[in-house]
Image 1 (cartoon, rainbow, N blue to C red):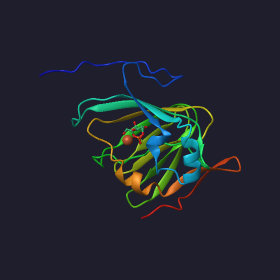
Image 2: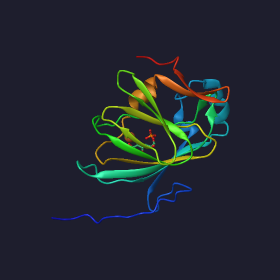
Image 3: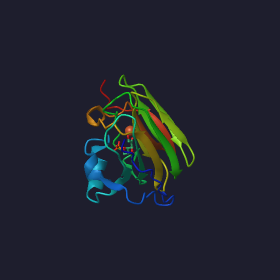
Image 4: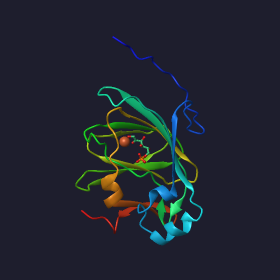
Length: 189
Ligand SMILES: O=C(CO)[C@@H](O)[C@H](O)[C@H](O)COP(=O)(O)O
Ligand SMILES: [Fe+2]
């Protein structure tokens, strides 16, 4: 029997960086078609800000193993909509996940394949359980980076297609200085 080596790493709780992790950067240009206000999107695209970064420690896609990753989701808005991650189902749709809030303020939008949505607020210390089959997207509703850890089965994979095409049935927007969860006018069942 070949055993893997255990691993201990210290997440930088201020920046979200995991030493030695694989870094992925998502700019606004990677999120074309995701925000409802297309004019505001085109306007902000001139600056093309970084929307989020992911630091991932991933294993081979084997049943039973675990991956973990931090996400640093920057503050910002496109029109009234707060910056968010793309959001996905898992390719193996029955794979669950745990998120843990590290810094900043935000939340998670979750959705079943039938379009039933749930919003869960997150702050440092919040644990979110993402059950099997639910799509999930995080949203930064604050004015500093929103940083969290995710732990997920190594064979879960990411299925971005359906969210990229249809979005979520709800939007997270600012209205008169408040965070509101509203119906997505562009949602198609
Ligand atoms: O849910 C997971 C892994 O299953 C997170 O690590 C996200 O991958 C990350 O927050 C970026 O979000 P996406 O761009 O992948 O939606
Ligand atoms: Fe996930």
